[in-house]
Image 1 (tube, rainbow, N blue to C red):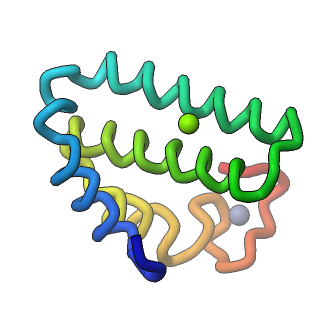
Image 2 (image 1 turned 90 degrees about the vertical axis):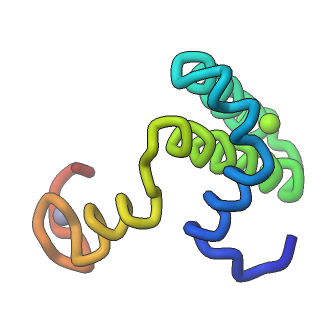
Length: 102
Ligand SMILES: [Mg+2]
Ligand SMILES: [Zn+2]
């Protein structure tokens, strides 16, 4: 995979690779896989695995999040732009001044 792959391209790539399996599994089963990958990322950080091993787990989490979004018919690029593209959802500023994350 080349660098510079944007979020919309990545979600489309995951759609082409896996949608034939993902639609059969459905959202509940896909969510469980996402949580398993989140657990692997947690372990990679907690165990102090090397940077490339951690990077691979971040990639897995994003891939499974994209998969779940595909199953649910959500365009992640549109979703993040709508919620975060014009500023913090809490305070509306590009550099957040909220006391807690939204
Ligand atoms: Mg993994
Ligand atoms: Zn804020």
